Image (cartoon, rainbow, N blue to C red; front, side, top):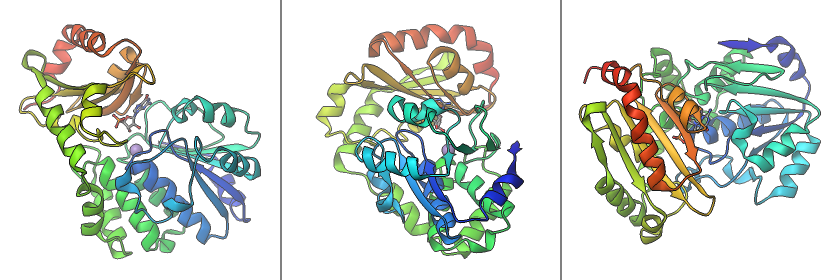
Length: 342
Ligand code: 5GP
Ligand code: MN
């Protein structure tokens, strides 16, 4: 765990400030929950916070309190840039290096004259003036709760903050089932429920909001599932044509990789999602036990993340990307076989 210059940050925040809070590109439940949770907290403290995310977030997060006030850097570019210009500090949440916001926003942030404060749980964070980094944390949303504790403000958690943070913790832990979920996580969750998070509603808002197209796409993805039992590996592909046939909307592929990991005996799962518009294949990796998909994604697919959940990308066509993936497996045979008893 790194906690850098926290006391200085605390005194800086004694005065009302113009603050920008940034989440990563293709924001997920934790990026949205942590940025909006911090937004409600800072607002309550008398600051003027503004949340910015690089691009659109999924529909199943549209109900989150405060989401209407955020700016998308790509679509509301002038408002977003004005907010950055006005701000005295920028909080970076749920990502570890500036390139995770995409090149346009990265270029703007690299020219930022004031300080950054990082709150994040990804491995290998870059250096920033203020840092609260802890890869053992299940989610950045849990870290925002602990940040409020460090600020001696945990009594300020209200229904809005509780709702946002609950959502981020729930989504990043796969509903409290991943290895990163600790007894502390459950204690935080219990407090968030006490402070007004309506757990049944949040689960339903996030998980029972499938469109017909999304379920059809899931059906196609499951048909495409391939297992390679000798390497305890399974993977799924989704092509541009399959997206089009199933009325694909942003966020529809979220979570599908977990079906590959749910196959009995599997230790590593991957999903390869074609995006010919951007000229890339977006990849998600998941693992059980000691096999590090962070290292795998960093070493071979231009990505990273956490030991058991990471992302990456490939610039070669879908079929070549899959061929490359399969060709890498033999060198990891030992690690894959011994990663997890299942
Ligand atoms: P997903 O597969 O859901 O896109 O990402 C899984 C986890 O890895 C998330 O926590 C996400 O933030 C992280 N991640 C995805 N892509 C990258 C990447 O390119 N670099 C790093 N450091 N983390 C990533
Ligand atoms: Mn996260």
